[in-house]
Image 1 (tube, rainbow, N blue to C red):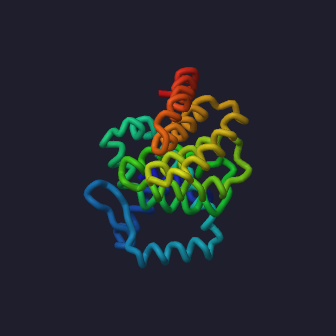
Image 2 (image 1 turned 90 degrees about the vertical axis):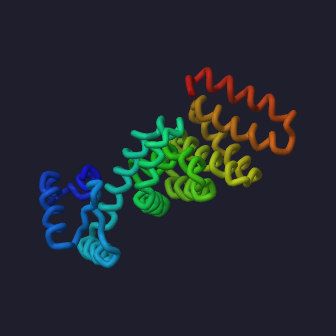
Image 3 (image 1 turned 90 degrees about the horizontal axis):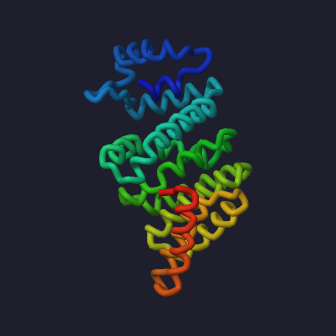
Length: 231
């Protein structure tokens, strides 16, 4: 219900009307309500709803609200996801179709609030922890490319997320290239926490080919993490 409020509760519809309308849709079997309290649509009904939204000129508005909801949802769980808390990972997994749809929109439509970058950054570790590293890395590239006017700090953090996932998809050369670009942006933004995370990816990628050469890179990562309070 909270998601429906965020996504559909905009003019001329009041947020307070959303729950009533959902109930009416369920009564008419146009929406389904499962035992967990989640609402869902049959694919034929979903396609019809997309058509009506397009006819009303609301496709972009709805998608933007949906992206904002997804970014807020992911950021609320970010710390727990980084700690690999099973319950939080399960919550993200349950919303994965929504998250994929939100990221697809972000990759193709610049957002003034940069919610695609926020969403990508918050879920950086989720993709690796649940076996979707290559998918996460590809989303990282697409979302950063889709928001070229974002502040360097946001772009650096999201690009680091993609590089991190790229490393765990065993594409070490591309992980190194993306981490170097993210590091340049993080230095420009004065973001020591993201600099430290970029050095960590670079150190890990270097370790795979030359363990001895990775030591000073790990040390740089650790120093920046400590200086910035990034744990």
